[in-house]
Image (cartoon, rainbow, N blue to C red; front, side, top):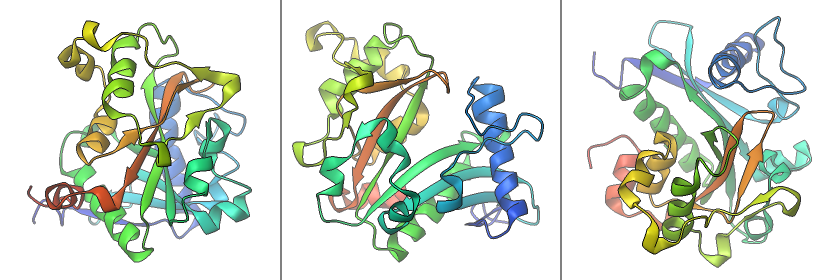
Length: 252
């Protein structure tokens, strides 16, 4: 069995598959990271919210097994109309993306079972995402990604690095909502140890940066989820061939 064929990726089609995805999300976002929310079901161990019925839920399993080991949830622009907006809009002003006139896709709740992190599982999940993007002709991907914890001073170095080195261009520069805006330029560029700062950046955010992704302006402190969030934005048209091959899980 090749590394790629070891895993199967698909969209959840049944209530049981959706619950399996929500159960993995509970294990990661609630048990592991200390999150909570109004619709979290602690008795059934399900992490869920009002947006779940409107998203496509991409699930990853080992071939031949029904156990869900990886999750992405995906919301296209037409689906967001039915949902009453994007999930990220509670944290970020998405005006630049709404007005860009290009097909957009919101990514969220990305997680892997701890036994499968750092290997081929994430590549296989990304292959599935790349197929979804191509099928729906998506041009702009975006979504919030998180640092663990809610103390911006402890995250001053990585937040400053993202602001100084990876800020989105004006046409795609979403901004944290004013009522919860957290500055990210906390350390001047000349005083920043870039290598040490990058070591504090979560692996998922690093992966998007390697693909040419950007961050919006300002962070959002999510006390319910015990995270500090940044909004990632990726323009697929700006990916070079090497980046595109890596995105699809192929050798770069």
